[in-house]
Length: 212
Image 1 (cartoon, rainbow, N blue to C red):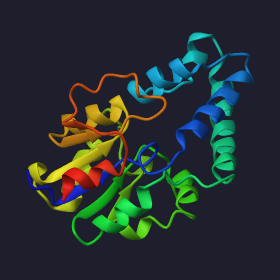
Image 2: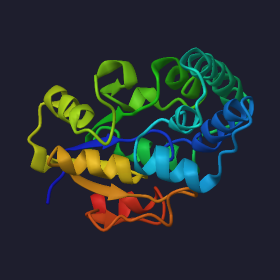
Image 3: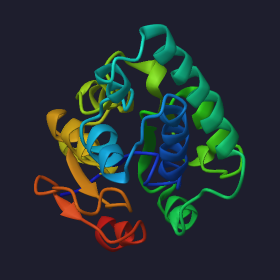
C-alpha cells in the first residue's frame, strides 16, 4: 500500500499530554469528593470517548456544578500544559524526515486553545498542511466525522491515507471513516484492544520503518 498522506492524532502520539488531562480531571472531580482511577480514565475517555463528568452525573451532582467543574478543569489543564517539555521523544525527528515526502495533518479531540498552548514550544505545526481541533466538527472520536472531514480537506483517496492513533476511540474513528490505522499504545492504553489496527507499533520511530 502506498500512503501519500498521514493524519496524526495529537495527544499521546506527538505529545505527552494525557497525564496532564488525567490530573486536571482527577483534581476537578476531587472538588466534589469523587475519585477518578487510571482505569476509569482509560475506559471512559480513551476507549469510549465519553466525558469523565458522566461519573459526576451518575453521582447526582447538579448540572450547574458540573458546568463549573468543566470550566475549572479547562483552566487547570491549560496551567499544567505550561509546566514542562511535552513533545514525545522521536516525534520531531519523524515529522522532519517525513515532511515534504508525504502530506500531513493533525486530527485531534483537543480544544483549539489547549492545542495552541501545546504547540507553542514544539515547533511541529510547520510540518502540517492543516490541523482539525474539537471546534472544527460536531461529533468527536469515536465518530468518523473528524477523519471524514480531514479526508475531504486533504484531497486524497481513502486508500492513500494513513492514520496514526494511540487509543481505541481513535482507532474506531479511523476505521469508521474507511482509513488504515496504525496504533502506538501509550501508558494508559497499552492494555486495551487494538485487534482492528492495521499495525501496532512500539513507538513513533517505528513509523519510519514501514512508511518509507
